Amino acid sequence: MLSRGGLYALQASLLLAQRDAGGWISAARMAQELEVPGEYLAKVLCRLKGEGIVASTRGNRGGYRLAHRPGDLTVEDVVFPFEQPRPLRRCLLGGTCDLDNPCTAHRRRLEWNQARARIFRATRLTDLLPEPATARTVAEPTQTSHPKDRT
View 1: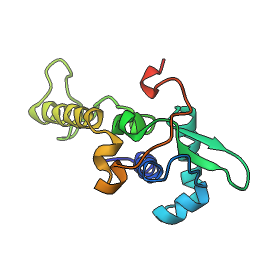
View 2: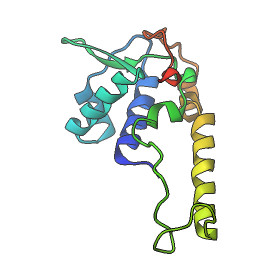
View 3: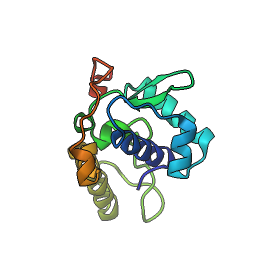
């Protein structure tokens, strides 16, 4: 399950991935097409820009576009800023677990989180696009570093 920020980040990135090469789209237009709150989406896009996932430009023809080819971006790249792992302090059964000797429910929850992380790392944006969109030519990236180059 994704947080609202992670979901909007993924939806916006997929929308941008489906656009023609070099096409810019405004945050307001994205919010309208995705049917999400514009102010919240603007904050998500600002964070994605800071992470190097999207590029932006101002003006009448400005907006956002992906800073990388969709095939170079994974779901993890896009949702990472919004879905940072939290330590599992609270047990599913209530109370706290001994992390050196976790209960069965706690171990299973850790497995779920690890499986989710593997799926996010293995899934590229192009894996989630409709077939015709994956064949489109996508603009060259405007960023030189990859989002995985985080420090």
